[in-house]
Length: 583
Image 1 (cartoon, helix red, strand yellow):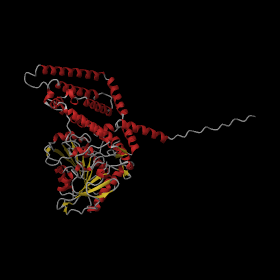
Image 2 (tube, rainbow, N blue to C red):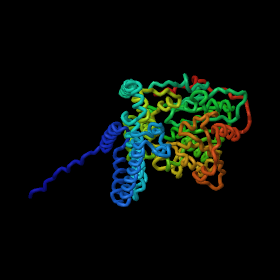
Image 3 (cartoon, one colour):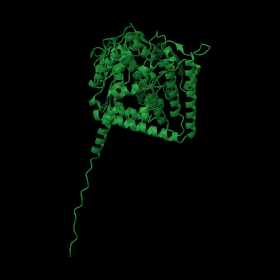
Image 4 (cartoon, rainbow, N blue to C red):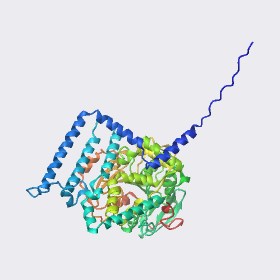
């Protein structure tokens, strides 16, 4: 008998799934760098959604066709009016352009430049209609298509080209083209600096022209330096003030040149002021997470202030994402029975991210996956990636107007303290950046009660200390309607201030600023909640800086006791410290 053949079972292949994943991440990281950190897949999906639904909407197509013909007829009538020498009644052929400062000059009302400007504005209005109001398109996709459409139009604006910009033509004639030669020289300088990875030369430097308020570093760990500022009054409020800036910015936006320094002003009002200066993270900090920033940042600072001053409570002030971090810390403290916060000030800070402005366009799942793979490779998100995204949000002012001014008019803008600060960007560690984008922007976990800190869930409604919330009217990062939600998401009394200006310019608005104005609302917990627009329409703005009502509010929320200034803490070096110089 023949025995059956015994075959050796084939060995199963040993798959290294992690290795395949690493290969994907390396590829995505390289792709992300080449694309400036922006996902082409995200844009393609948005475009496909918009284009498909537009193709299935004959009524919308007919409306767009009608509007295009109507605008073409209006343009033709304006051209004929210009060619005839103007209107018989002496009025301008072209309605003055109040909505777009790029066409504010008188030459833009004259043919042929009036045709260029009006054609551009007509195209801009038509594309806005074409990219919005189409039934079935996801809201996020609609906003993304409209955003990129606006980016393309801003790039093609007649102000950006020598042949269609009357101001450029006049300057070039006046100087015989020397402005273009200077502009080419400036462009070569900037391209060389970009290729070498060099930072822009700043006119305003911490410790020399900004961040001049006298103080000492009194605490340092791997993540923060805590600065205690020297008192300037004989007596001070018994409750000290802790300032927590966002970890994506250098703290000295609140200590610019002396007239614009909120820190110096607070000292003059009799407050003992402490400020967190975040370390600029590197590859060794890749595993620092959101809760590490709470523990090593906010909580470590509160503990140090208590040891230095002996004060049982502190006022907390958080700016932008620093305010979000402070709110998480406050909720965790309330949960744990820690009542050391006397009050909380939130400057342009959100806790609900469902209406987080145009920045939310870059926080979908596809975009976050690309950013995470870029950070995974280096351990942090490079500062240039975030700077590029913020520039896109205001490309009309930060890219194209700068290009015309520097490279075509041949003029270098005089530096400003706020402008130099905005270029002093920071990196963000891999774990922290991923967690805050996913938990806050993508999932909105904090507002919806899913956020965890210190081993347990945190609930905003547990916060009972009084809150002063500041929002700016022209904020493209933290829209004021989003910040307004603090009035009903927190379980405490909230004083809400709506102020003039943008995300940074509105906050840095000292007394004496002729353009400063504010509206105030005090909402007591349990009272009816007005809607944001409804409230704003019923309250007239008050001329003046928000600093003054805030200072009075802060003094009222302390103990009211005046004491001799507390002794300075351990001397670890003079302000502005070491971490602020991290590049």
